[in-house]
Image (cartoon, rainbow, N blue to C red; front, side, top):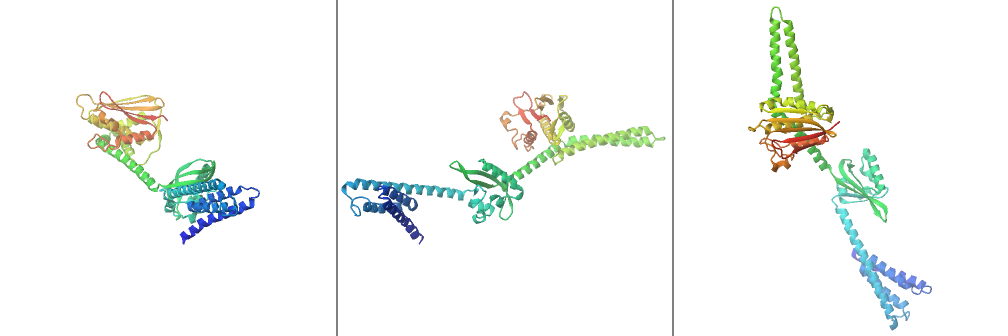
Length: 470
């Protein structure tokens, strides 16, 4: 039945157009004798446009019969005079060409529209078409899948009312204002599903221009909930890894820490015993006991300072960004690594410039960088037997930043691996995890500085990093 209705419509509309052309031609024939050419060619064109090729050819046939009968001599007879044949065939060819062009153009436009409609519906992105008043005109399947709205739910509603949480409506209004100015708007935001739940999306909006005028807007959504969750997971993993790196570094310094703690504790025990002896005499030596107790207080404070530095390095929470003295920070780390350097028979030379401006940074993170560079240098010199083991640390002013240089006399770089020094998990240590330099570079870059290695040094390795002045 649908095929029959379609057939009757196509050929019936061709017959209607030919009939209208005949009526108009007969009415205007006395005033405009040749007007039938225009009307019948128009009828053929419209029949071909609305009814396709078959209906167009049917309109050509009807038009030829009617034109030959009414408008080509002999009039009102199904015959054509010999000298009118060129005229008759000219009209026939014109009608055929008009019908073919019209039907071909309509077919091409319908194929293009069908192709665009298929792209719209099958797009992996959720697409919404809205008018200039923000009313929803059309949505695709992916939009329905991720948001839950059907076309019936959305038609004639404002997209802001459907999708935007109340707290983000000012942001959406600003986006629509930019769209009205002809701009493309791209942002990551939160939108609301039909069930009221929220989801993270990447949203791109752009105007639809026709004849130089904006007639509507396309809004394309991509669900980034999982990718955002993955980014947050990666960020947390990096934070955990950085924390692990600090703990690993401190583990390597366990002997140095024990040495630093044992010294003041041993002194406290010795001075405590001395105070007991002074007070046990007859008469008690009060002055000697007071001196011993003063030494106990001093050594207890020293032990507390050592423990405080260790706790700050192991602390997981982020500390505030402070104005820091780089030389003071270097001295603090050198105190922690002093025993390790002595155990490895390494001479530490600190060439620190005077009156350096302060830098803005996280003390714990910058201490972590210095610890990592110094421990790497000490380990690289462990196997050196043919030259002195020297660790040279320099600080200097460099334009609008502070430059710190760490140089050792160890084994140096293997030029084949030089470009991989800062790659994650690249290590030359048997028990290393290959994240020390990677994390150090990330910390320095997060502070607005730069960390790099020098190549082709005579002996050992040289690492530099800069920090912008506060």
